[in-house]
Image 1 (cartoon, rainbow, N blue to C red):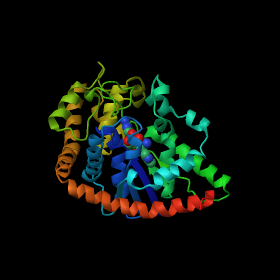
Image 2 (cartoon, helix red, strand yellow):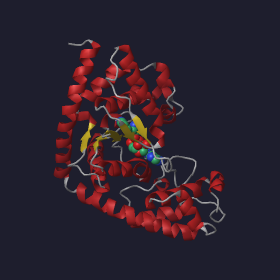
Image 3 (cartoon, rainbow, N blue to C red):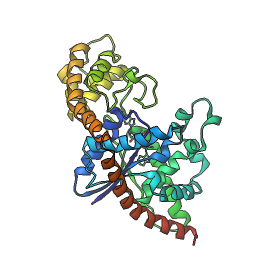
Image 4 (cartoon, protein in one colour):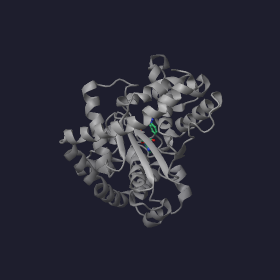
Length: 334
Ligand code: TYM
């Protein structure tokens, strides 16, 4: 079966190793398979659910495109576009917000995490954010959605919205029910400072993450400072449950080398962290240095990046405008 792939990344700066290993690396592999039809969206409407500096946002939209291309996504074979330029996303989000139930949104753990203690001060957009995500996916009849583990609950909501819309309006199979594509291992990369917390763009300490724009020196210094524990590396995978930092660093190494965690454990079992960190630095520099170099190069060619978006927006708009037309007819708008 030909897969229709849709996924999105927020242009909020600091794209990091978690975004790469949890999502973008997968986008590249899926995009290189000729049987797939892939659409990768820079979700700028999602970005403004928290305050953004307008000038920086424009730059971050370009930098996200540059990151996609530098990582190996071919903009000729795949659609790369930004959400705010295809108005069907905002229109569908409104309609789906009248389908989704408050109880469903109240269960979203990411809102609770992002809003923190002061929920009253969070934007309404931050709360209804998963509904916009459902609009993104359902407008393109996506069959598969590659994401990191943290987006699983949002995808389940997209499926619920699709099912309820089809039921409410008696339109069997009209909205396609998307399948999440979440890697079994390595779908949740953790902070370098605390192995129990997700690696995140919004974490204050830059030492907690490897940014995709980091150069070799930054990578070396961050890995050298990465938190570890006093014991040598284990021989047994079960031991890692009690050693989150060791588990995270070994997982990063495995994912970058495309090998299983078991294989990495047997390679480094009994060794100390300083020796392992040398190998980890080597693979990180080998894989990420070319990407950060290419991002820098592409960022000096803004016209090229803008042309990618112009072309992608036109193609995305052709698909989404047809779907929203049908959605509106079904709802009874004329
Ligand atoms: P965003 O921009 O937060 O993250 C982009 C992708 O990176 C993954 N990710 C991680 N994976 C592993 N370990 C981590 N530490 C880590 N941090 C982030 C995320 O799971 C995601 O796949 N709501 C989405 C964007 C979105 C979207 C969509 C995704 C909007 N519409 C439609 C799929 C389909 C988000 O905020 O991702």
